[in-house]
Length: 259
Image (tube, rainbow, N blue to C red; front, side, top):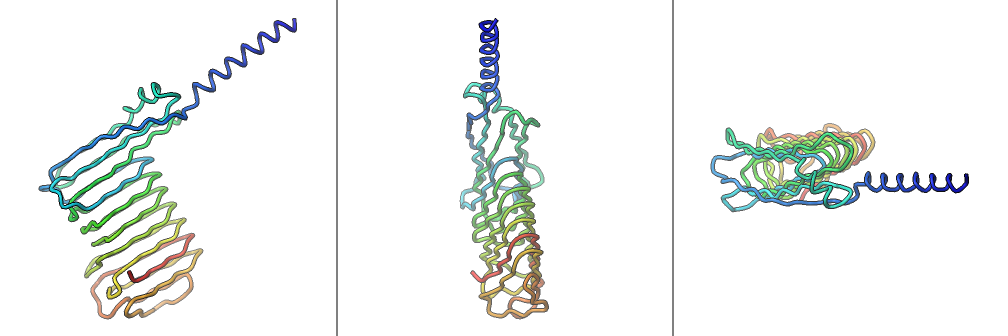
């Protein structure tokens, strides 16, 4: 009797072990491809992905280039290979806009990811959406709108109007130029916001945080209409240019500083 129970126990143990191994998707497969488009006639880039980061860097090339990296987990290389094409990458060019979008399967069995790394002429406006991923923009000159659920925004040497909204994550926005009639709108629930501007900028600003502190420093002139620890508003520079800055944070500090 004991021998029979022992054999049954061993059989169940082997079955449980095999099932556990098959259900463990700890192998990740990555596949990279490059797509290009002539930049003539394109003045806006729209990019949407899930579980991936988006990078856009300015180039003097006449092509818009996107390096696309898809990733899929599996129990082994064969399993991951069978499912990596479940990530669909669609593209379209219409009305002066290039749109690149990653569509992920609706499943919890395995992890999917798609990263986009663009190089494009600086005069393209950017409209970017990602869930669970960072966005980095370098030397772009026409402005951007960025929407992230979980991730951070980083810009360097940016020009134009910028709108960045994050549910959870920090924002570091470095503006090389910020001129008349342009606007900056930055908002995050959990994360610090840092905004770097030219020292001689002229703009109206309003910054508030529920749990945090605000610092404004380094500018030629700062005139406050509200000067509280967690709410500051007023004017940077002298004279009106209809340029506006609006920053809202729930949990985190705000720094507005001259470059």
